[in-house]
Structures are given as structure tokens and as C-alpha cells.
Image (cartoon, rainbow over all chains, first blue to last red; front, side):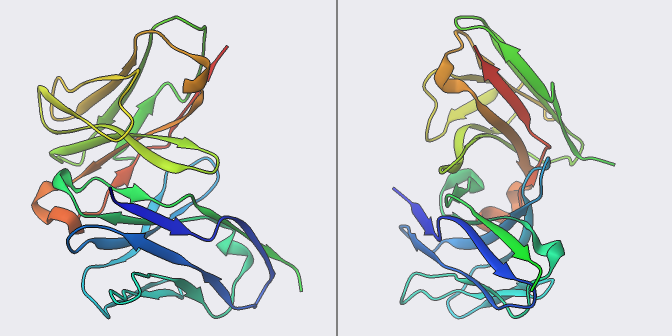
Length: 113
Length: 115
């Protein structure tokens, strides 16, 4: 079946550091890829998505490029801020009813430099 | 104004008891979903529905039933709650016209503890 593998656990980094969260997927067909963000006490919310090879999705300074060759959709941000503290999920949709397959989630913890 | 609401927001249940989690959406969406969230597993699909009075099994349906009495409401039922069903449960809705590109809108979650 479909699966998503992303950087596990948590990433602690100094504010203004460069952030990368790796995401690789396995799916039949041509999935749409998503990044969702979840703040404490809330449900996940869409950060952005991409549906074609080499398409770049972006929002709030975050970006990721759909790469069908390496089956990847890595999340990057040039300068992380305290307000980026959250759990980030990579996900895909490839089947009937648009159900999502999620990665395990990565908690981002910005620290004062 | 929240478009997907869940009740209760938290619940403590006893092993072997019946639990019903409710979800209500005002998005006018055809598709609704139930996911459970566990540390280290992300969110996993339990049941979904694309039309009222019909439900479908997701990836981890064992021990759960679902009910969709109307377009707006979708319930998750645990007939015999077990310790392993302690988790946070999320309901979501999406617009079927967008296919796999559809954004899902999530509720705030229900924290279920089975003792």
C-alpha cells in the first residue's frame, strides 16, 4: 500500500537557522503530496500541496518541490522563527475518496540563538 | 467560526464500554473521515464516507464502526472499548469535486482515554 516516510521525532534548532524535514513516499499512480502543520490543541491544517512533477508548493516561507524521480517532497525554510514551533506532517492522496496517508510527523522546536 | 466540530473534546471510558464520538461539519462537503493519532504513527485512517447513509473501511477499521446519518454528521462508535484504543481522534471533511487535490479540514480532536 501507499506509505510516507519523514524525518522522525523532533528537530531542535536555533531561530534563523535553515530547516529541512525530509519526506519520501511510495504510491501507485500519481499522488498529490501535502504538508500539514499542527499546533498544540488543534487539528492539522494545510500548509501547501503539489500535484505534478517539479511543481513547487509554498506558504509562510516554507517550500517543497515534488520530485517524482526521487519520490521526495522535502520541506525547507530558510530562517525558522519561534512561531514555527509545531508538528509538521507530510501526506499523500492517491486513492478513492481522497483519503490521506500521513507520515509519522516531525516536531520543530526553535530555540533562542 | 469553526467548520468542523467534534464532541466530546475529551472522554474517559472503561474497558468494555461503548463509546460514541461525534463530528459535525458546516462545509457542505460530501466526504468525511475519521483518523486516530498516536505518537510515532502520525494519523491513520479508520473509516470514511462519501455520501450520507454509507460508510467505508479505512486502513485500521478493526474495533470501530461508523455512522453517517446526514451529510453534516459522522460518528465513530467503539462497541467494546479497549486499552489499545486510547488515542486522539480527528474528524475531517473535504470537497469530493477536487479529487486527490482536495484539502481536508480537520476538527480540533477528541482525546479518548480507556481505563
